[in-house]
Image (cartoon, rainbow over all chains, first blue to last red; front, side, top):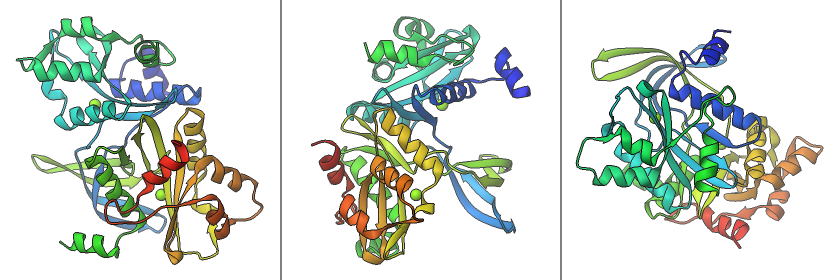
Length: 178
Length: 178
Ligand SMILES: [Mg+2]
Ligand SMILES: [Mg+2]
């Protein structure tokens, strides 16, 4: 129940939760088949306190080699990374890791659709930005961060609603299928 | 070093390892961008014995909602599940879980390429089988297992080599791109 209340009010939902909810909606309606990849965990030791269920008692988070989300939509491979910042005037580049950039370059190379979903929490705004475009900016800008205005000009606002919470596939339609 | 020896001899490599090695090769050569999805783990408790590294001290394996592998190849979304059996005369259907069938049906629906890689270890043979084809067989056969001969007729032998170990993209080329 508390989940549903959070969902209604939007409180307690961070970007990742909202994307997960939206993907669930998109999957249930057969709009798209997109999942969050599980966080990779290196398991060192497992106990079997009850016969039926393995209990992991020592494990460590590993650095993912790829991005947060992937799947298929309208016959195309979809791959994206989600980031949020509290900064008002710019997006810190360090939030995007080199392996994520490399991965999204390869997505493009192989004919997939790659993008970022970037939220400025202080502005209550979420942008979809084409991966090659943002990567080019990252690789040419002579600063540690990208101005907020750049996203207003080059990103695409994702409308928020009830279902799905984040209507990001509408932006994908406009940007990659029209 | 022992890894390399295992790799050469083929000993100590199970199907999943061989696919992982093959995908690494395919990625390194920019042939395809396909990864094994991490096993989902539900983390219950984390300690911080050293300041820098989180140690997971209680966690449980969760049932994956999808398949083992996905990615992009020649502009198409690729999704597959790998299974091996020691059985000589048939493949037990229970090895394929209902959620894997449902997922691969949706892959097809959304225009992706879905298949199974099935290894009969006793025959030293690995087959690629189109997912819709095997799923139809599973849903119509009145037995708990599918005869080995069915795979000989409807599957496609994956050649094994040094690099990549399993040349499964050659079968994908023939089956889905020609
Ligand atoms: Mg992220
Ligand atoms: Mg498997």
